[in-house]
Image (cartoon, rainbow, N blue to C red; front, side, top):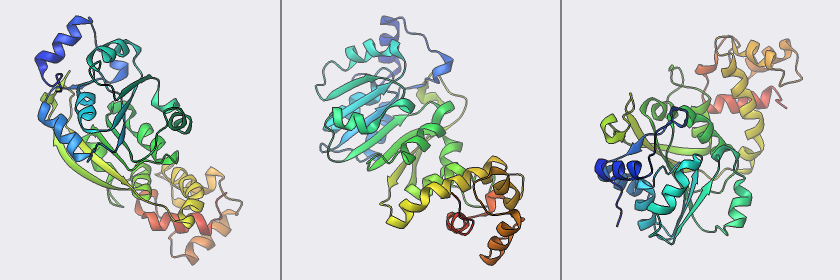
Length: 287
């Protein structure tokens, strides 16, 4: 049974190993068993699944995942936590611990080495400072996963579901919408962590879509266009994209193509929907 699901038990492990939090890792460990159970339930983990957990900490969520999943692979950046994980997870023979930076992991090689087949689900309590790079990396690396269920800052979860024309809407929103169907499951108060973060958190699940051949073909040009637009989001679309140099069209040709496709050249990045951006990448012949 899971044993690391309270403040007292967490502190016992931290004191045993004289572990001190480092701000650069953005570590906030969950200490509420009900939330740990809700994450596993929300991720719909079954005995047939391989779960890849990013940033397991001392293994509190890992223990709950190991009880439900066929296999759990933990990727932990902080090498100080590796011996702790070998201790706290010693009772589980279905857990593998990897000391690495998830942003540097070659998942194709990992899947081959670990002989991963069947449903794969990512689950994580993500460090807030690096949430967006991790999510975008998982979405755009063509990893064969079923879902991603993560604890993130509440504002980031809301950004993933934002609507065009709102301040929260951005490149992350469009990537999440293109590759997945997002669903915010519940919010979490700061007092459920040690140390306490200064903001509320939320657990969100991203259910992976099966892309069509046309969507696979356009994804490169699409996200070049999205990045160009949001990198200079205060500029008009035509200026931002022209300045990025991602199309061989002249500025006048761009303006003509946009008008002919019912896209106003003076619009700014946050106005366009995903369908608009797909159309824009096509008509501007983005390389």
